[in-house]
Image (tube, rainbow, N blue to C red):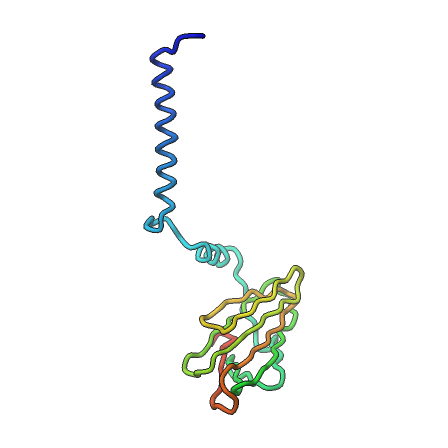
Length: 164
């Protein structure tokens, strides 16, 4: 067996030191105190805004069912009522639909979203606690909005679907 020369020992120690520093650097970079750390959803939102700028759904593309009214982009429901909203198909590949609960109107709202495109994953927000931006594909989507406020309570619930 050949004898280990001092230069070989130095090279082995240097490689071990480089690997150790790399592992420590990656470990410290992954802590929550790291300034480089971002939330994956924020990063995805930035990429979406940069490369894919969907236009907003228009009033003409919304078909509001019985039990609710759509005025100036705001969907209004009575307490205990349910309403179905149809987002019609369009030529745009992706459109943006906002769901924003209006806090001045006290009723909690449950929203069920059923996309029509393939593949599709239905989503339920029970209750809707914060504003959401939904991507609606060209095939459209169906929304079922339910006001969880007690029946016969005025004003019931309100949900902003379109930008002001």
